[in-house]
Image (cartoon, rainbow, N blue to C red; front, side, top):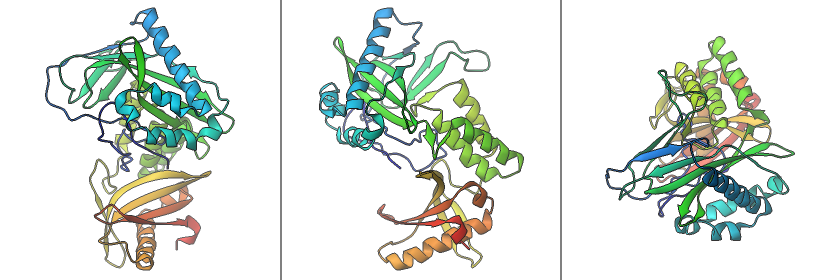
Length: 353
């Protein structure tokens, strides 16, 4: 899994959450650094592409396209020079992610989607910057609406521009948060996300999820719904009519015996040992789709003993949830000690007996 930190403020970097049940889950790069905040009386306004003036719309699209050209060429020095001070001071994550994907992005062409313009007013960062864009109906979002929820957002004007980037191997979306500084739009956030995982797109995962649900395999359905929904989200803080509907589908099969929302879940083996699961989520390894299971242990310093614990955990998981064999090629068990240090083992399904 590739992942990094990110940007709209100071030096507090929010790492990718391993809890795949949340919408703020992604593969790729998240660039958002949040400022410490105090409660303010700030107000928020959102403009869709149709709502904003032509000059602003053109400036946002042209700026994002120019910055993408820097990304495609691997010109991280120029991108850093055109970033806000907060982003430039925490630029290593962006630079590493661009270099990791350089082979796929070189020579790629991008098509910009309709931009959004967010305005936050007040004298202090918003504890919860919520922006409602477009027309909402009696049942919530419509086909032309969107909602953005960004915590701890400093006052200012921000453009959100997503570009679709087809490549020979796969597709990507590249999204910029553009922060207005004078007459310039600086990079205030950067997101690089694949549109396929293990060779499959959002629709494939959603179709499989519904098939699993129809067979009563709710754990497989839940994991595939989450993957499908996440692949449909170019940035983790944007919600649309589609993602809201998918959220409802996710909730309809959410299992009570899997960890989610920051809560752990207990798994008891046939030998009577109880494992405290921290998170369970899919992970693409090449063209294989594996299942990652993170669980608590006291210590991982004895690698031989921890490997045996990982194997026992895998067996206990498949004993309780045999349906997982159908949905995944293997399991990655990661024992995590209180310090955060972990030890992982990967085993193909056929070898877990």
